[in-house]
Image (cartoon, rainbow, N blue to C red; front, side, top):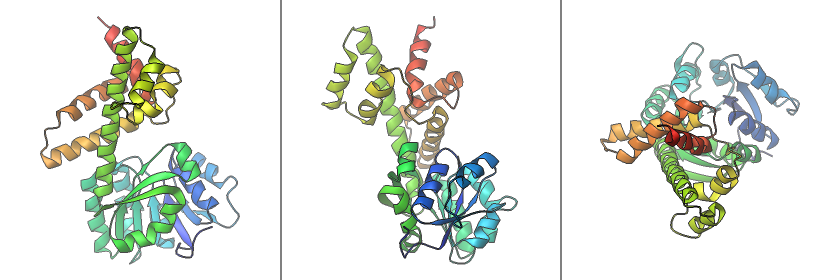
Length: 303
């Protein structure tokens, strides 16, 4: 059940692949929600088996803000966050003084800081709390959640965050969590790319790929891709790691925006962005990120 520190009702905007199980997790932990999503199917999915009297829907983001002192956003990108926050029927103009908005998607840090300033001008707070983990972890409430923002805003959101997350990491001021999430996912993308290319070379040499994976995981080449993707998704041919190519590309573009903001000539990042963009162009945004292996095989077979 929700702790005494939890607000009576939490706003939740964005019932997509991750947002829906996160919202369900909050309901299962005893929270009440006012939810908002443009998709009727998503609203119906959340309403199914929802505890009686603890779920309501608002027709617009402003309707959520009028009813809730804490609102969580789980939206695809900064452009959609800005539309929800500042567009017609938007969240920010309707915020109560002292209310807190938590952007839990993967947004561009500079845009997060800008929206936080807009919220502050209304006497409210906007903080960032992107998540790491699969849909399975969202369902189980075992996500890793990075949180950027001040102590007061964190205190207002903490009970809800702990209901959805197993590991809570405070990263610093607002925008820092979105920056760290994007940079983390760049490192993951680079690791998966390197592991996939190494696997292809091992295959051409006739090596036992499962044994090669064991060697990587017992040695300095170990990373999350070698531990959770090579044997399970690529060698098996399953290609169902649970993270779409389109989302991977979005995180790499956010990392690129950080490189531009900081003036860092990130050559490895540029290479990753080019390869992932090409893979997305051939396989489509909904392909699993482990299908990079298929793309590289096909790409190298071309004359």
